[in-house]
Amino acid sequence: MLLLIKNLLNLLTIIVPIVLILYTMLDLIKNQIDVDKKYLKVIGKRFIYAVLIFLVPTVISLVINEVDEENKYLTCYKEATTENIKYYRAREEAEKKKEEETNNIAKEKADAERKQIENIRRILGEKNKQEKEGNPGSFIGSINQGNTCIYYQSDYRAYSYGGIGKATIASHGCGPTSCAVILCTMLKDPKYTPILTTNEICRSGGCTSGGTYFESLNKYLKSKGLNTRLVYGSKTAKSDFYNALSNNQMILIYVNGHFHVLSGLQDGKIRIVEVGSKAKSQKLYTYEELIALRGIKGYIVVSR
Image (cartoon, rainbow, N blue to C red; front, side, top):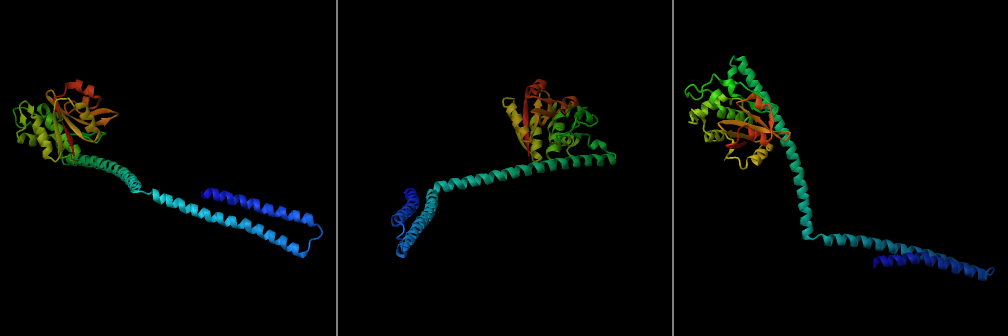
């Protein structure tokens, strides 16, 4: 309706002045010479009327525009229903939450990198300290590119396995050595060596002439404040392995007659610390290649 009125006013603004001007010109032509002062006044009035007729619609048009703008605001206000308000608030909160999550992820990543650097410095510092004190056997290990503490049984031939006959860490201590890898890495504490873990596990009754009890290893890791989930068999192993390793967790794997560690993922493959073989620890494995090594009897998923 307002648009129709505006169009009519615009039309009048154009037509009426033109009509008045034409009418005046016709009068001038008719009267030609007999143009007196009185008639000039009439002509002047007509021009004034023409100007007024031009201005009035313009003013009215401006008023209508203002009313139209107010109507737009009113329409916007009316459309601001409770549902719409809730929707926009929810969207704003979601965007804010997303931004916070992005910032948190960046912060966690930075913290993780800082802790990794601190871990390396601490372990290397401890190693150097022991070497200066003339007792390098307290820390026989290394740190790989994944910032994982690396221990091998073969480096501990001189250390007894719980005082059981002639058993040594090298011959029987794959379980405690695997625990040392996990504890040193996850707790970022180089005091956890195969010597310490073997002594503590054996003192608690976890060692036998045939090796270490699987459940004893799980109990020992829990006693150090880590979260564990013990699983027998390999039904869900593949999904468990990839899910855990992609979330910076570690896995103590129980294969036929042996224990070792899954320490992370690299290029989509599994990185391992095979405490009984330095050569195998240098390689990356698919799940199928890992199974082909010795099979899987069970595993412990370990997290902070």
